[in-house]
Length: 246
Image (cartoon, rainbow, N blue to C red; front, side, top):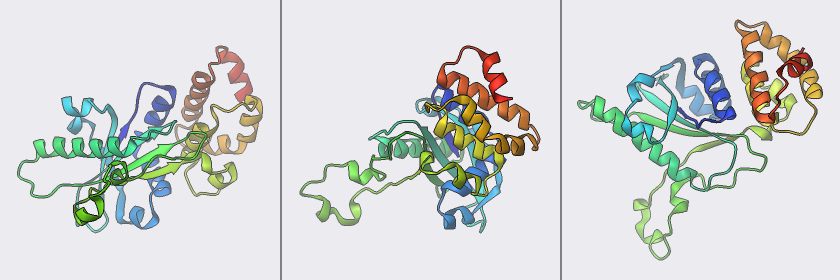
């Protein structure tokens, strides 16, 4: 699993949380098709960052690399390429196919004896205001006028999953079965850039904050979320925000 981020508040926030295997597993259960998520042994998620640090992968700037196994063991090794987006990128299908190829290239360089490639599942975690409009298959980006039908099975096909965070209401996320920290992350991504008063937002999340605090490291997770809001909303008075959060 590769979470590819840039040096922005959204990216740093998501990166810090999704580096934790239990949160990454929870998010994958939520965003992947049910049958696909059930086929993955999410309890086996582990960091593979040191395995994929090379010049090629630096070109696509992956920040988090996780690997896992399937339930059946038919494909013992599997990766998920996950991009975090706050705006629609019309070239995302191309980017995701390139990222997948980089994973395979790096993996092949380290496993010359292998005869098959590992599975790679591409996912986009999107929290922009407007619905995702970009093509979700690279075949739709190719100008095939006059030859597409004739090519048949030769026509390229490479798709990816898009999860639009903002499409879910607070009540839906609270009832989703996600861990409290995962709920907090998705709600923060969806609402940190909003115009609603911070006091109102934090007051509405009081129950969620209590659930987060009840978990190990929960206080730090709330502090991380508060810092994320400060950066996104360009709030300079940290003490003021801390008082509002309390």
